[in-house]
Image (cartoon, rainbow, N blue to C red; front, side, top):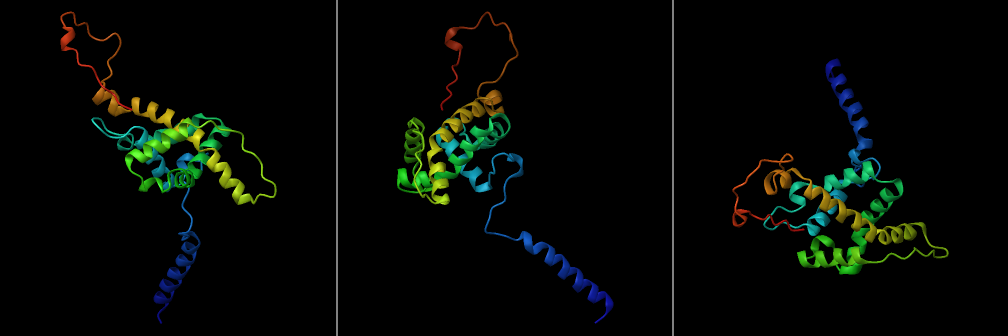
Length: 201
């Protein structure tokens, strides 16, 4: 074998050895943009579905159509206290199991009405303090904590979904265009000519 071929084979082998440790398909990568929350791509997509349940598409675009989930994650990651960030992360992690137990099926398998009813019922829940269980397994404890945080997580999500939607470029430029204060003077406009914007959500 020529020296050149040997070097090529050695380079390929060395490069492959370097890449092997990073080829772990069992665990999702953490999105670096939200360093305080440990969010994966599948979690972000689940959050988008929840936000779209809160403000679904209709006459206007829905929350998922304008990527409100990214606004929610930025607000929680950058603007909330560490304890609230922890509650949000726990609730997002526990939402899948909560959905199966409370709704009988996975969230993505539910109809739009079932999703809405589940989210509304969870938001309305009054949270009691989490009671300790003697000799509880650590994994079981974590699962209970995650599910216990779901109502608080959904309340945070609802607040930022509404805020992000109303502050979005879509609303401010296409639905309810922003005008600089005080705006132009129109002294000859009839009340019957004024169109009222209807913003659902």
